[in-house]
Image (cartoon, rainbow, N blue to C red; front, side, top):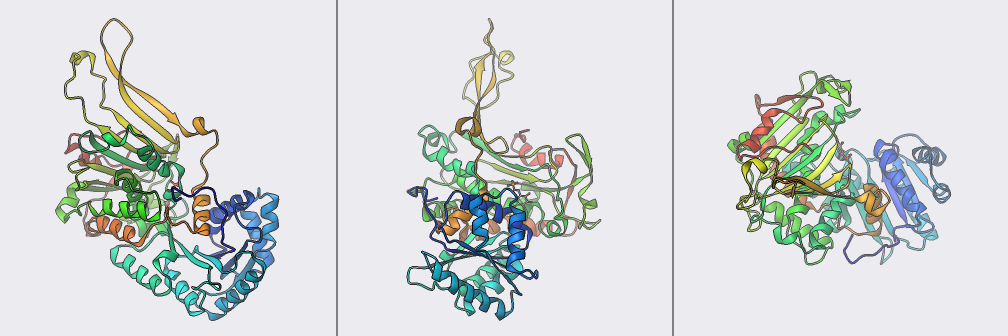
Length: 496
Ligand code: BG6
């Protein structure tokens, strides 16, 4: 979403989806693609080639596509008739020979030959394998002088810094960094992008966006859902790897980074990396006081009883996987030195809410009596990312009446009220950007590394036997031990 880019049509002519019969394709990629096609944002003869091990014919694939998008419009239905399918193994040359033949075929009918995008909607274990096979079949290079090839991958990008570096080394053997589009779907959310508009399209916020005015910052990604049918996956991930290392680090970087000269791929990503690089990594002793983890027990959500994490499908009864993670960070630069940033995320918390709350310092002197200002809180600017997308400013006001009583009130801005329509799905935005070739919202390799650098020491302490894992009841705001991270600075978690 380069700041200079307007609405644009895609030059990509083919989207090749590896893992075409899988859950991600069905739930996210195809519905997003259908909307993009309906809006005429792709070229007329655009083709999808699905690849998976499932033994399907072209017809079976087309049927499955329409099942994934039951309300598809006429444009998408017509496009689906051109969709192709290859049933094959990711480590077998036949699969790639067939792909090569189909791509050559499509190139004859399209207005932009040689523009191919590969989406690896597979388990990460095969990313390197598929990338290598594409290169071996010379499918990592455009077939025309002005063609372009892109490789889209989804998190997790490794389990730690070492495995992330290894994965990148494998991918870089076959694709250059500017061909690799790493998706973090939070970057596709309108309200996350709006952090940039709020900060850099307004004169009034930036002057106070620093240590002189900000007391502390709280970033929350709370989910009321449990692990649903993903227990097996989650057992190996946990809240830190699933959310904090990626989605939360992105939100944090956009909120605190310096203004880029231009909102484009290099401008934004350079600033995010600089910001992440300024976060000191905790020592093992610091981890014990600056990080906390928990696991949900049974409880009640929206009036319904829900089971404990340990009794979810695919979860070991003795599991020590964290479903809640919290951390206290600082940013060692001129703008933020000494301002604590608290991050927390968890499953089965009291409600679904993602927000950034920036609490400002108290006024230097309050000229009202204590008894009349008891209900006055410091100013807080809350950037509500979901579900009630908007911005709230908490400020002091006089209560009507004879006495000069002051208390906090809030001023609200809501996206839906202001713009009418609900924001677009994150995947639509990101899919279209990948097909167009705009990498601004995708994660560069050095951002991934920086995020692992910060969380690795915490994960390493947590992996030790006997490291505390605090229970919390489903439907609460997490383990009470996590309150300590803030209490040591005389702060408390907000109740959103
Ligand atoms: C995914 C995680 O990346 O993000 C899930 O793997 C989580 O565990 C999801 O539920 C949350 O995304 P959203 O867009 O619903 O906030």
